[in-house]
Length: 428
Ligand code: AMO
Image (cartoon, rainbow, N blue to C red; front, side, top):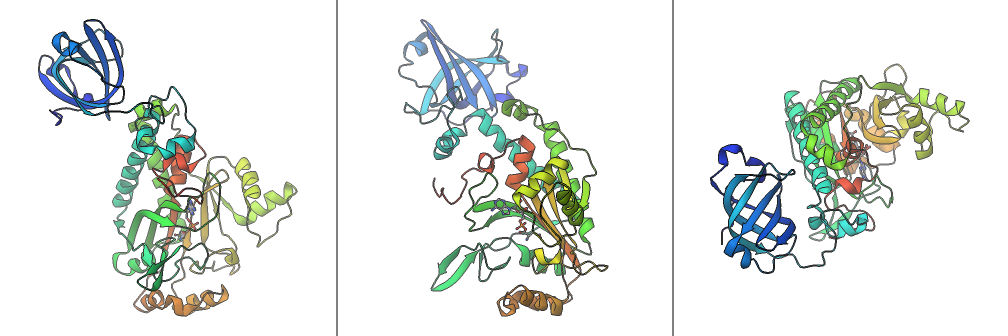
């Protein structure tokens, strides 16, 4: 039995004509025509045609579609329209049988609903549409890391099992930690801030956890967050970083992921920049003009954001929120202490990111914790670091899963997460 490949299908070139190769992949199609069989073989990189003749064809026996096989054979030119080359097989080994009926159709001819696909995610990944989404996700991560490294951000990994809340008390998953109570981190907020006093610019791309009982296309209990924190930057500076990051992701994938765009039947449109920057106060005025009963200090509800999103389609920053709507670590504006140096990045109604300039004065931070009903003694480990020369700093967090939905033009984050977790889904 041969099972070590010499080539991926996409690596077949005219220089290999007449040479022997070993391919490995899944049987997408199989047509037996008397003395000959035609197999369409798919691996992660593409599809190829395999011709089986003579004794090998006579002894082919039971060989199911979607079984995994290795094919040893000679590369030759083909007349078939859909393939660049074909392989004349000398040896075919079935490495793993597919037992039919399969729970979802990997070719996608028979459509399955999202729950069925998620319940059989590994098989769903053989569907080219699904595989393309995750190939795109890989390229997005690559682009993000490249841009952040170019901007001198260092990648860090903060703990996910923590002793006290990072974003305030709500929405925390707790677990028994050898008799003590531990929590799953909601964000790397406190750690990333602390790291600015040694590393200046840091970023993290990790999963975080929120016990939100939300049943929407944009909320998960486990989501992937891209977080940055930068010393000696104000909120408008980190907004610039965020904007160039999003632009680079769009440009990179639009250019380098043509096959994936074809497969998901969606063209990535690079947005125009600079992104519009509107203030919270402007939003309130816009909403009031549209007859909404909102006033300064009210949080913007989904219905409000849908109105604002309609007026400002695509990416825009919504900045200068009232202090009272923002977490304890956000700093006020010098000219008006009721307003904060903060922002959200929106894609229409969808919030993609939030961030701001942080308070770095320890006394004020303690005051803010108390004002927000939080117990400063729960934050002593964090507050200590503010006595060691904490630089002024700013940062943001952006949901990778939500960013992916904007890129591929869908509205359910479950499509872009391998094994999504929500209140109704803990398995597989
Ligand atoms: P915030 O709580 O706004 O800010 O979260 C930042 C971004 O993370 C994404 N996100 C989620 N995505 C899917 N499911 C969820 N349940 C979920 N919750 C959040 C969103 C959101 O905009 N520490 C601050 C960031 C900072 O100031 O640096 C924070 O966590 O896209």
